[in-house]
Every structure is written in structure tokens, then in C-alpha cells.
Image (cartoon, rainbow, N blue to C red; front, side):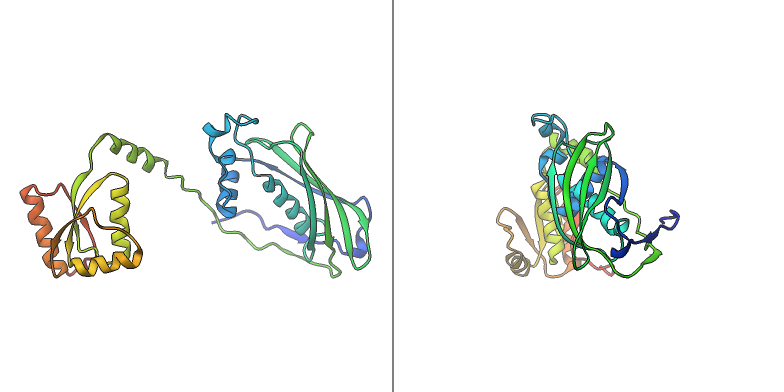
Length: 265
């Protein structure tokens, strides 16, 4: 649960703004910031995520997405200056230097010009901990005309799961051959896809136990190929389970994977 103190938001209306007014925020870039931005944006360029790849780039290390800094500019505009009620109309940006993990970025926006119809131009500058610019630009917004002062809505907690231990475990299987595995009555899509994931990972050689015609029809709907699988016909989940156990006892399979079997089975 997020227990941080409430944040109060207060805007600056068009009539209150003066040329030269400014607001800023400071953030330190973390690896998690880069990963979260990649998840939200879908931008999985290896220059941002793959350290081995990044070593051979002109920057020699992983760098932040350029628009990570751009979103911080939006944060200042929407929460500080002018603040809530601001309508973002346009943005010009120039990316001057890369931002690396551990860099401390200060984002500052400054009112440059007030125009008719509540339009405002603001200079935008993102600087690193050395005071060097990393992003420069200019934003155009429609400033609010009504005063807003209210508490910001609390945000949910967020946790990144990198599955590193799972990857290590999967790595240990690479030195071993796939095992023969009885897959019991996989007549649901998620059962078939899980089985095929295990095949693709080199973990199992499946023996599918169940109604072949029915299971193949499900595979056809999913657009997946079962041509490399062995089959053992069984009309019901109970019968399939019994046949799987018999195979295991006789040494015909090394493992059993449960498919679509209810608790009553």
C-alpha cells in the first residue's frame, strides 16, 4: 500500500502567469524507470535494455528513452506550471545528450510568451547533475482559466518481476534432453499452449492422451501444429488419467502434465 504523504496540486491560471515564471522537478533515472517505460510504450530498442548490445553503440552503455525526459516535461506542465487544467497543444524537443542510469535530471519550464486565447509558450530544459542540457525545447499550452487546488489521487503500488531465477532454472535444463511426458486430456486452449511452450523450450516430448479429433479441432482453431506429437486415445478425463499413470508405472513416460481435468477426476 502506498503510504506517501498526500500531494497538493495547485495551478496557475492564465491571468496569474508572468513571463519568466518557472517550475521544476528532479528525478534520478533508474533501471526500473527504463524497463517501465519500455513496458508502457512498447519501445524495446536494445539500446535501452540490452547491456551487451549497448556496449557496441556510440554511447557504450544503456541509455534512457528520449521521451522519458519528454514525459517529465509533461509532468511539470500538468502538475506545476500552469498545472491542473492545462491543455497540451504542441511540443518541440531536441535531444542534446544521452541520459544514463544514475543520472539526476532536473526539468525546468519557463514562461516565454503569453498569447491570445489563453495560449502560452514555455521554454523547456532538462539538465543532468553536471548542469549540462540533455533535452531542450519549447511547449505550447492552453493555460487554465479557473483556479484548481486539490489533493492528487493516490497511485497504486507497482512491482517489476524480472523472472531472473526462473531464467536461471530454465538455463539448467539446456544440458538435458527433452523427457517423454504424458499430457492428460488437454482439451482447453491454455492446456495446449502450455504444452507447446514446454515443447518449444526443449523440455518435453509430448504423448497426448485424450480424444484426438476433438483436441486437433481446438489446435486448428488456435492455428497451432500438433503433427510432431504422439497420441494415446482416451474418451474421458478419468480414462486419460488412468492411462497416463499406467504409462508412468511402466516407464513409458518420465512425467505427467495435467490438462483439463476436474477435481472430481
